[in-house]
Length: 300
Ligand code: 13P
Ligand code: SF4
Image 1 (cartoon, protein in one colour):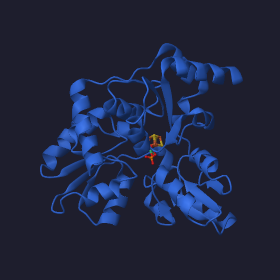
Image 2 (spheres, protein in one colour):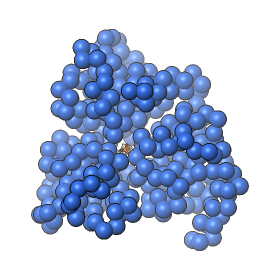
Image 3 (cartoon, protein in one colour):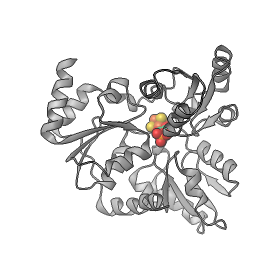
Image 4 (cartoon, protein in one colour):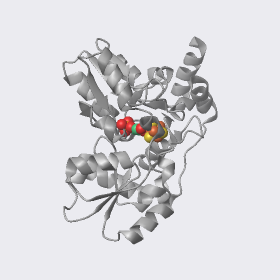
């Protein structure tokens, strides 16, 4: 184990590389990362680093975001097959078809979409900023919020805007049930329940806090509870424990595991640095169009 860590460290220096990891990465990857965060912070942080190579430990759309924002850097995804079923639930053709149906609407693309889908949309958003983004959009326009139907429903409730949704959903968050939360709450009656907005309505309805993974971390840091039931991917609890070791974090469902996030391991990170693969490269036209939607989000 130590030798692989030493080897990664040595190659990182030789290659002028940084390792960025999402909060759902396996604990050993979060522990070696130079920076670990939610998808919005990963994208923002990627623009501030002085490095030639970014090893993005996460899934493809996150690596694409890093590449869109840093085309002059080499962006590596250690496992080429690490995707996201939610992102795959919608294609650029689907968006074009929806555009025909709702020609006057503003199209919002979740960060969990391919670059090609972002390129067809007007503005990007993440679970960290969806409400803020919507609050800045003209009140008289319909909104098409793609592709997660739970996130769109939650945004509709919170903003009271006319929102058209897609039928996408995340299998990991679908696996979190009301029963599991009620059971955990019975074991820890003084705990707070935090859930991701990709969760089902019945789960969101019995929670104390709804937000993305960065929001959960802030909520746990700034509230007085000692125990939190965490309704999102299980390894978010590792991130929370690392940052707030004095508190207790209980996954709402131990089986809520994102298989794509777990495709990354130390051997693949080492291999990625040794061979400088798998490089994420996009067609420049798509990159520029997707960047327009992302820049608009940052601007707002
Ligand atoms: P965050 O943006 O909250 O980190 O979540 C990303 C994700 O993939 C949720 O399933
Ligand atoms: Fe995609 Fe769900 Fe995994 Fe997030 S947790 S990357 S939405 S499959």
